[in-house]
Image (cartoon, rainbow, N blue to C red; front, side, top):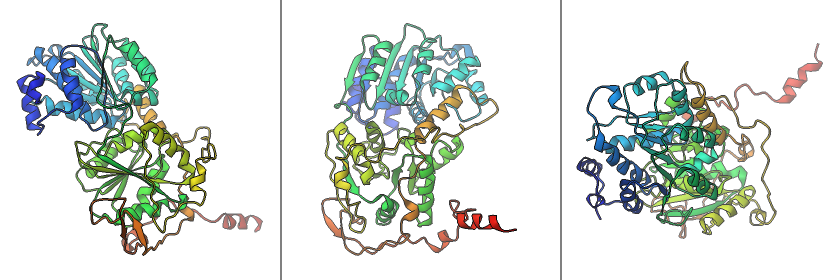
Length: 504
């Protein structure tokens, strides 16, 4: 089947051809005809399977029938609204809309918090047919009367499950009250839950359910492996793995903003090009870091879950879970950054005994027992295999107010919902600001000349085949060691501070 068989207009077929697409993916084959026919849709597919094109192409097909070339803003009413939970995902959808609408006289914009609201207001007042937005910033524009939603014909909720996780449901319900009752609604998500289905019942009218794979199923193009390791040796093992594949990029996930920055700094000091992306960074910094990673200038990107759904690299080979997510569904989204567009990928998880129960929850969700392979020289705690039978070992309640920080401010008019967007992203980032890697007590030098299972990085990654590894030295390079360590700056032993109290 080709895209021409789906009934798309010639302008869209030309844009698809220009983008290098030849055949639609399963979600596109099922969703596009149904959306074109005007039905509401509840669609689910594994991340990386072309879900975005599955709703943007038929959306553009629908509103292009009444496209207007007039320069008058009144002739360019907002007719399509796409809501996304994070700025990165909103930008990703916006880029897709721009790509597919290049031959159409349609205007589009992406609005999100963390930046000055005034340029967005000026652009909206020129007249925009397609708006991609985060919920809080959209409500900012509603309050400022810079957008009118009374003419919206199509509403899309992308990644609806993350909307729930980030607490956007009250904002979404408020937005629904501003939209016409007669509209087409589409709800797309990589995973479904019972709560998502209840939301769909409220939003959609006789929806068509489209699932190209069973719920929460991970892509078959991804190879999973778990490396049991002592918590204090995690960062040394990570450097060990990265040193043996010097030309390959990797996306490394951690739980908190604090650990994100520390780990990126450690890798830099170890001579590995790395940077961090999390909710405390300004939008400009995040955009520049993502662009550097996408272009290959940056080898390792250390990220919190804020980036799990906003990063789209077709041939990213490795996703490494430095810390397991505390929600099993987040594992699906994290590893969905690799194995995309038919390419093979590897999902590697470094798991300590404290995380064994989270591993069990992940395996239960994806219905897959992930192979566990020890790396000699980085053995786990002696009780690793017993930890899973000890209840909630390692689960520590977060302290009051832990992991929160002031939201980003992009300009004098940044306030309200846009600020809430940033705050919610950061709340997801920093739910725990405690370090679990024990890095302060870890040795700065690890040497191993023994054979290790599955780490001959000069060949395609084959975890089942033991191969010999060369000596590993994680001692920082001379240039890196000369840089000041911000984690140690200004700290003095408590004995020194207290020693002067008795002096006159």
